[in-house]
Amino acid sequence: AQKVTQAQTEISVVEKEDVTLDCVYETRDTTYYLFWYKQPPSGELVFLIRRNSFDEQNEISGRYSWNFQKSTSSFNFTITASQVVDSAVYFCALRMSGYALNFGKGTSLLVTP
Amino acid sequence: DAGITQSPRHKVTETGTPVTLRCHQTENHRYMYWYRQDPGHGLRLIHYSYGVKDTDKGEVSDGYSVSRSKTEDFLLTLESATSSQTSVYFCAISDLQSYNEQFFGPGTRLTVL
Image (cartoon, rainbow over the protein chains, first blue to last red):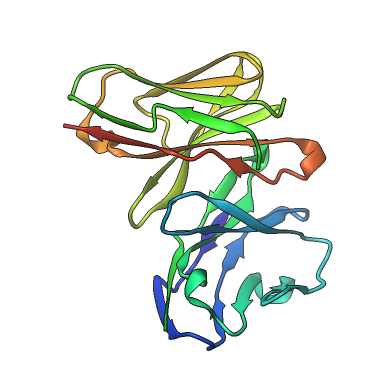
């Protein structure tokens, strides 16, 4: 079975704090793809990153970074120096057979000034 | 931004009536998906299509049917709407060339009274 767990339902931080969103996945596939999406209050879903199972390099994009660890089946997302505009729901997802995505339930991040 | 539109964007209907939601893409992507988003559940796959007239069921397909008669359009039909189908519906598209990154439409908010 394929499953994505985002144990943190809601996180609240003060602006400029660093915050890490956790994602744990389960899959029996040896090749798989993981994704992060952002859903701001306006409601659209914005693609952030894709990671292949055979590429364990961490990735940094501006204030965003992702830590992929196959040993712990985790794909965590860190926002450095958070800003109010980072307030959103963040979803981690695992690609299923047929190419659809299996989403976690999301983590709601609130960044206050 | 990927060219994906959904119509209608908002709809209120009564229990027992049929409802059809439309997803239209201009990207010529092969794969199309319908998800529903509910509080506490994240996004769940309803149906998906891997080509014209090729569709398959997702996790929560009961009470829904789909059709894809041409590449650009993917229709989701609620045959007899129920209050449990009140939700936000998202269409998504993907293609192998984009490593299955899914791009989402703006969503349709459906309320069944």
